Length: 115
Image 1 (cartoon, rainbow, N blue to C red):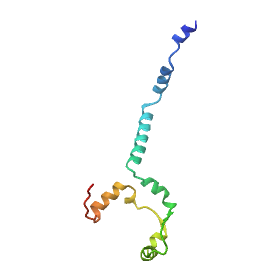
Image 2: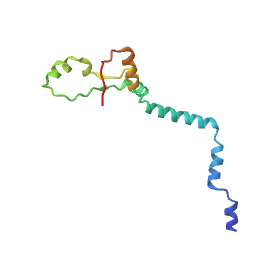
Image 3: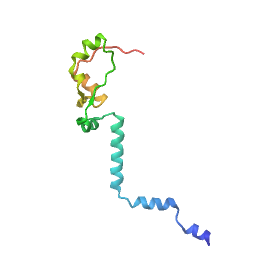
Image 4: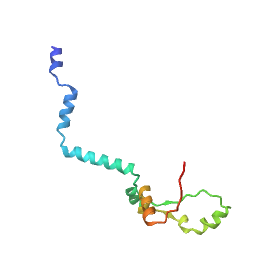
């Protein structure tokens, strides 16, 4: 009797598949879109949204330096930007965008790279 019940009862995998077929296809597509967006956002290291959200929570610039150094007296003490809060500009939101910006709009230094 128990063997007949086991044979007639559906497999748990069949039940799971039936439950998954009840979910509309658009929900799967939305989930796939969200996962692809998150993957692409992290893969490209494009943290523009994080910078836009945290724009009002600016961080102080933390410098490790020797206060008796001539470099400190020559540069850091005269640069007011280093004494205030830091907010990344839109073209600094991704290292790839930084490279493109420097290549097309800046004057990149000439160098040769050898291994």
